[in-house]
Length: 218
Image 1 (cartoon, helix red, strand yellow):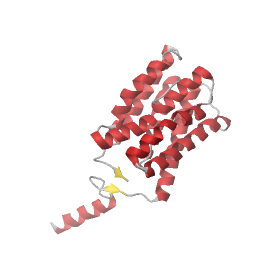
Image 2 (tube, helix red, strand yellow):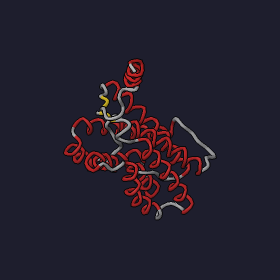
Image 3 (cartoon, one colour):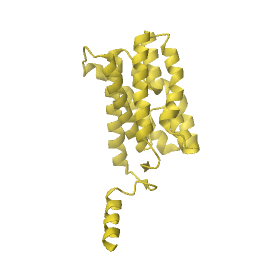
C-alpha cells in the first residue's frame, strides 16, 4: 500500500496535478506559449488564404472582408478587434487583455508579412480546410492555456466559459454561423463548403482538448 501511494505521488508530481489544480505560468512561459500559438495560427491562416477559404472567429471575418474589399487581412483583423478590448478589461482583467493584445498584434503582423516569406501553389481546398483547422486549433489551444485569445469571439467564448461553464469550441461554432452567412455572399459555394469543414475540424478540436477538468491555467 505504501508503495502504491508513493507511486501515485510521483505520477501526480510528474503531471502537475492537472485535474482541479491551476497551473501558474511565469511571464517567460507566457511569452513562448503565446508566441508559438501565434506562429502556428498564422500558418493555418496561410493555408486558408492560399485556398481562398474562410475560418472561424475574427480571423474568419477579416478574411471575408479582405476577399470582398481587397484590403490587407492583417490590418482588418487588428482593427476588428479594437472594440472588444474594453470588454476584456472589464470582464477578464488587465493581464488577459495585455496578453490578448500582444497575440492579436503579433498575428496581424505575421499575416500581413508572411506572404513575402511563404509561397504555396496547387493547394487542394480540402487539405487546406483540414490542416488549417488543426493548425488554428493548436494555436488557439496554446493561447487559451496561457489565458489569452485572438479577439472578439475568443474573448466572448472564454468569458462564457468562465461564467457559464460553456465549452469555447461549441460557443465559437454558434457565433461562426453568422460569419459564414456573410461569406456566402462573397465566396463560391464550393469554397464555403470546404470552409465549413475546416470550421468543424477547428471547433471539434477545441471541444475535445480544451476542458477545465484537464488543464487549468492562470
